[in-house]
Length: 364
Ligand code: PMP
Image (cartoon, rainbow, N blue to C red):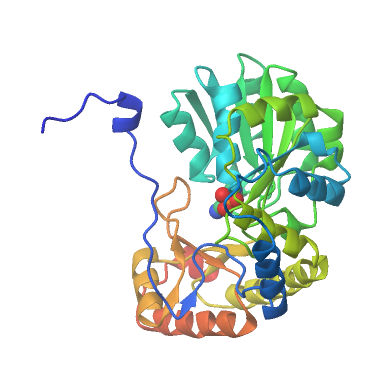
């Protein structure tokens, strides 16, 4: 059959890049390294068993919105719950970017640009500065004109560094009410920083949170936005009705009943991140970039070769060397202590097997 005359924005778009590989030590998707404790999984199943499966769930999950709202002392009518924060990135693009502009940095989380292209927004991708610093001047200049939606992952991804809170205040002020400013706090728990004061002062700021990282629920698919209630009403219009299932709600409610489980996981992950960063920095031929997230970006002489050698040793990391400014870079998620040790041993073996070490990296 001849090629269908579908929208050129879609035909021109490459699919989302992700190849699933099995591995004994899986450190490629910034997930929580361990599943929830068995009693908590059982509590979630009991909650689910107590619901009617033949009825539609709430149009928008009211109880969850209240619980998330309480967690952040945020009004529940300003909480928008969806099946992953990806869905809310799309909703924000529909309400503020479609037919207008989408601004973000590059490199960053790829879904911002993908949704902009898919939905026919004019995309402005602003390169990070030296050391992957947020380009505050260029960003303020971009949002000073036109209208649209701006996405900033804070902490940044895949570089892992924080964005100065003052920079985001400047962006919000430059944007005024013409741009929606989405601050994506996917890794916020690991940084110990949020943007509560910024969002309270600026109704154009929307914070995104995910349950896929610190909460350990990547398989359940849930995220939420904290927005000004008037903005939240518009974001809800862009979601499909009944899209958060009873199953998703039951599991999330059970985890919200056990906040210590999440807090302890974050403490362990942060301690392991620091240990892993120190150990990586001591490896000859490895440059590790400072991170406040649950992953580390590091540069080696031969990213493809090191990636393949790690895989041969049973450790899966994520290649990032295709991204602008990230030549030679791989990203490793912080795992359990045992997994991190396995990764370090595999990396030693991979480096010994022969990626040549360039002078400036070896002595840098
Ligand atoms: N934002 C960032 C910065 C991410 O890295 C990710 C996931 N990798 C997401 C959002 C998407 O999270 P979710 O699983 O909630 O869709």
